[in-house]
Amino acid sequence: MGDSKLSVWIVDDDQSLRWVLEKALQQAEMLPRSFERAEHMLEAIQHTTPDVLITDIRMPGMSGLALLERLSHSHPALPIIVITAHSDLENAVAAYKSGAFEYLPKPFDIDEAVELVRKAARKNGVGDKDWKPSTENPIPAMIGKAPAMQDVFRSIGRLSGSTMTVLITGESGTGKELVARALHEHSPRANKAFIALNTSAIASELLESELFGHEKGSFTGAHSRRQGRFEQANGGTLFLDEIGDMSPGLQTRLLRVLAESEFYSVGGQESIKVDVRVIAATNQDLVRAIKEGRFREDLYHRLNVIRINTPPLRQRREDIPQLLRHYVAEAAKEMRVTPKTFDSDALEILSSYDWPGNVRQVVNATRRLTVTAPGAVITAEDIPADLGGAGQSKKAAQEWTRSLAAWAETRLGDNDESLLAAALPEFEKALIQVAMSKTQGHRQEAAKLLGWGRNTLARKMKALGLD
Image (tube, rainbow, N blue to C red; front, side, top):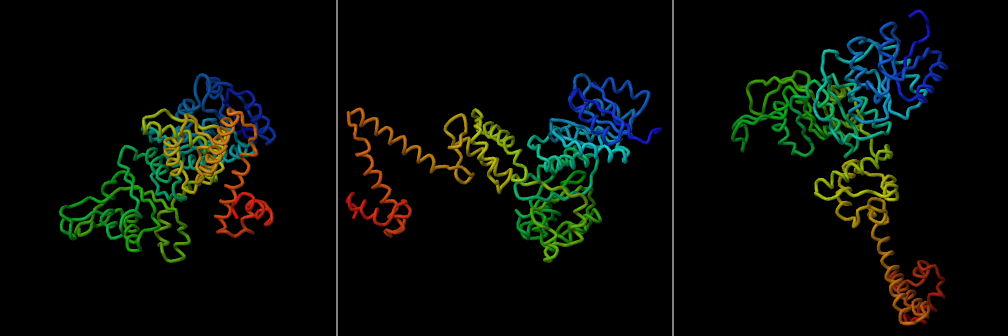
């Protein structure tokens, strides 16, 4: 490079975005050059090569992914940063598989983009160029535009050519198995088995046989030989969920398999060799479990080669409306009904709710709302109290006011114009009875609930014949 300044090319059909990037790169003492179409950039790169290329995914003419594919053959060492407004897992993975250095979803921070360019310039391409991407169908429910979810997508993309051991951490219901499946689907093992096992769902005395299999007659009830999950996953991926609950003895056996790629089945005399990629997951703090002597430190280091953290929904609230719409459509498909929609108030309530059960709770909530919401549109009134709505109390209040309005219309129809004189005593009587019942007859407390003084309550009770 003759000039000490970095040469950065930008390919994007959005003129304003090109301008913003150019200015930022010039300010950072770099030499930007812009192209509206991929075809124009391909002409220019025949004469000179930039240090870093920034490209959008979706453009008229040749797409960013097609451009990446072309450059992975002609300029495999060129670091490429992919910008896209379509922030989903599939674009992230496709970009990395085609040779991208980094993936940047719109809207992005301009300083972050400049820093990425510097980082890209220090690198020299990524990925295993001999490995061809899988054409398997994408995992549909990996949804998220939030930065924390984009980090997960980036990790899956970066690992797409690898078979490394991965530890997925995160609260219950955050989609750890979805991440594991995505890692498998976008790995060189995609056409082999993906075997999932929740280790906490199986009694500890049965888990050894479940993992490693058993020979006929090795224990009471073992009427035939049975393959374990490790054998079933040979050549593919074994996903072990809730690994933190595993007994110390099984932790030792698992460590041995990870170290030696062989094991003995229960009652077996000959070792069984396997080639299995292990992806483990936990909702526990394993570092604390190690300190408390509940988890082996050497096993933790063996599993924790690469760490991916699945964020809880309260840390990615901007994704909640998209998840709700996706799963309410799924619920409608399951039940063979027309999908319901959410009004803005309902979405606001549900987006403010903390979702302790995370995505799993969203799935269950959308099924429930599909059944319980009376109209085609789910409104704020349909949201139950346990999901942050006013729930039945608000519905009851509405029903009461509707009944009162109907009563008033009837009285007026009968030419009775003394509405308040008739309604007020009944209204006060009902409220006094509820307040006295709530406080078990304690007048001072009942008066407080009603917003009156004790003497006012005594006077009203006498007048209404409640004394």
